[in-house]
Length: 257
Length: 302
Image (cartoon, rainbow over all chains, first blue to last red; front, top):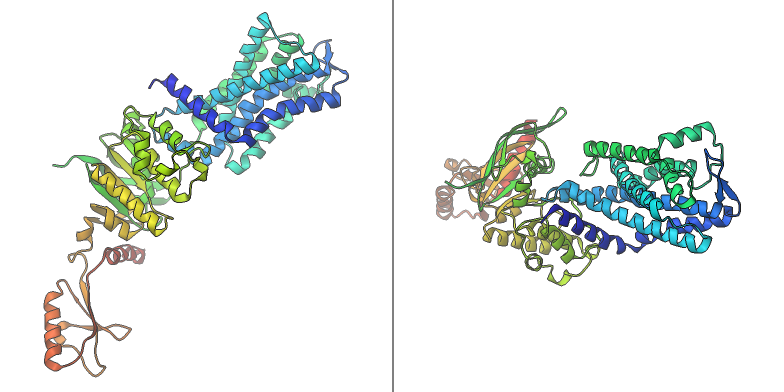
């Protein structure tokens, strides 16, 4: 069987198993929409200033862009880091390693599945945001840039997740470590709370160093008409490549003792 | 000359200062069921995982089907099936889906339904893996290992944690595999398992192979002496020629490579003198005696 077919098969089996765990699948899908409703209800009346610009946007549509970015991060970073750690500790990865299936095919299957989940989540968020809050749906050249951003983001956050599994000692510790690594950035990167026109210098610095704010800025450009910079996509991709290099060296197929 | 499926020479493995394997030599021929028998921590799993390609070695030559397992060649993984002590499968897939998924990794897989029948999971074909009992999951492990129709199988402690009837079933599966001409390398700490299943047994203790051979010769007279036990009235003593010794429980014991002669002498003497031999028994050494003797001697030597 060709590697492409094997990868597609892997996606199919991953997807079958994913939907048969309704608690896990349900929450993955519920989170971004739930947060979208909560944030827009609590904070959605005013206008949000976009850092580094003189623009303001309605807070409701601001959150459509934010939650679209959050969807990708949830599906590709949080979900992969936790589920792969679980699979490692359950001995699933070790068994796979003893078969002729190339390791990269197995991981590609998982990353591809997570990307598809992320795309569906973004589409749901955008559709809901369009209907409920009149958010703009990207079209034309904006759509093309948006798709590139989405795919680069999905792949990069998945790669970082695979690298992170190498510092997670066991499945029990995974939720704590994974959330600790991503939650502060979600608060400080213009995702959960608008940063306003002039964020504090250290917040600004964190946003420039880590990939989350760059990714959010690129997603905002698609939904909010804010300036788009390829450099944002490039920073996300650089993090993704770094994650891939680290993962290829440090990734463990056996439970860590 | 038989075809060597596994050939190991001078295998060593150290973890820091600890020498887990101190230079192991072994070989397994095609179609053979080979058991590595030893207590926990003796080095069985380390040896198996080196042969399976999961672990690196410190020194020595290892060949499995002509390949060095440390090289991680896909061709080798196509031809062996591995049942590890603790591995998992996705709990949300069914038995059939799981076996089909693994079968799809091989060029010439066996029919998934056939493999499921072979391990006795036909009734659970469409059950989700998470609903299986521990014993059924273990059988699924074997089914997955067989999915690619491998030439040889590694079974690492295949019946640990089984109840007696599940154990019998597992043994039957191994016997069936042997009948199909598969080469089997199994590790176990159960003497009866090695005795029942294996064509050849290597006893490992503290990282060294301390005995090796067919179970019959391992338990044979060249390794240990037979024992004759009996009771006699306190005032009587057996003929001096028998060199009998008194055990703690008051019984007498005669040891001999071949018990036929001493037994004849003893019973003849008893008939002549009219002294009764209560509880007369002849104990041939079992694999267990050999095993305890060998591994116990190792403990004593430390």
